[in-house]
Image 1 (cartoon, rainbow, N blue to C red):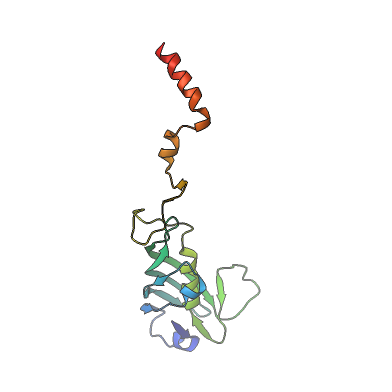
Image 2: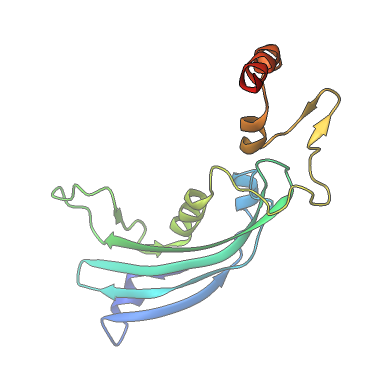
Length: 172
């Protein structure tokens, strides 16, 4: 998704809409958590002014991420809305970090799309069922994964004798 400044100034209107589908399979190499990513749809609008272009667009697609508990593939749909501003020439009065300076007279929003997708990856994601095929084991020799409810109901073995004494006092 590239446009030159010349192309933008040749537009018959001061704005245009775009709707493109992009393959971003290289994201699987940039972040090992992304096991697969579907073609990404980028849809939005660009408003052209004499010295700047502002883009308002939505990025949508689906990526496959590992479950934090079982390592099973979990589909993670995403829809990201963003606004980006490109300035044609650098000026000293610009202090905003969200402003991009156009280099080589070309505007390319693909790196921004990649960055937004990478920032959208959650810290943890969980599959619906712990019994998924291919999931990591939930128990083994002398250990098992327990839930918060199980932990609350479980009595510390060191205090089991005290609990028996308390029950005897309640009965008498």
